[in-house]
Image 1: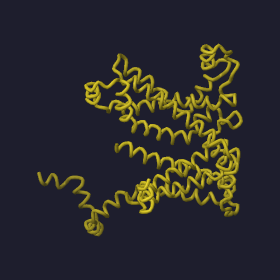
Image 2: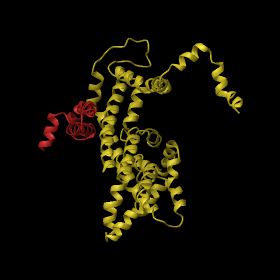
Image 3: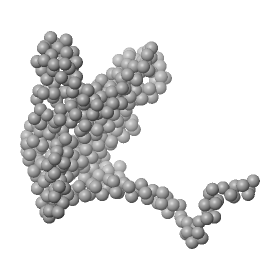
Image 4: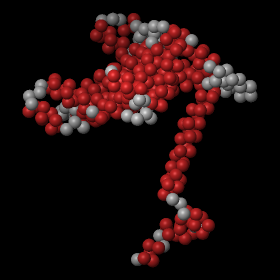
Length: 319
Length: 62
């Protein structure tokens, strides 16, 4: 038996290792071995995350253009930042992003939580409805963008006919993606349709994690359903809800594909979100230094918001 | 309120984190508000100060 184990693959590898290497490896401390294991991850993190970040910060202080690599790179100081922070078009882009962010999060949380609350009730076909509701989330954003472009068509679009059915308006009298007032809402509706299931799933996980005995104890204390909802359900689902808001907030801050497919940032600049504007500056106008400064501003904003949000989330979890 | 100022004086995490959080939130609001261009112009510096402050003060003792 012993002979058999000594001829295993590990033993054979050990025997075939040259003595010079084997003697060095034998002398490694646990700490050194731990470093050897995490070194590839640290190297990847440095190469993929930290280096590009530092490089971007450096570029943001220059007039570098990636389409003119042989041109001298001049140090321009804070000029790129000044240009962005005094530009009315960029300001409008920030406002469009804020409108998109606020409304998508509000609608997704309200509808997602309501759906989760309903799905959490035991009824026939519960699983089938969950699957149907989750379907939009599984589609590609480009497909969803294309799909909603057809739905919003004034002549043949189903959306216009549904609105016409409820309001009595002529379906061809308004264009969701062609009107400067309606287009920002068109992208909000499409994103809400696609990502509400995600919020619903997170809320559902929160609702299912509440033990039944808490409600039973509340029943014994003659607490009304309304009171149970506000003093048991909401506080216990709150960390999950906050997590959903964090994920959706970060995702929607960098929303690109769905909106590009749906409106292309138009009409005018009404649906040009920061990510779309940034892509245009970087890869259509080739203003690499300027777009790097733009990216740094967005990074600091998201990082700052995420920091205070994670702190709030931890506080809620501790309660 | 007295505890808050005592915490500031003794470099305690809680009150300093609160100030940093308020600065970040204010900066983000200034960045995205539709009312005054001057607020937008100074939004980044406010957010940056808040974020850097948050990173530093989160290492303060409780």
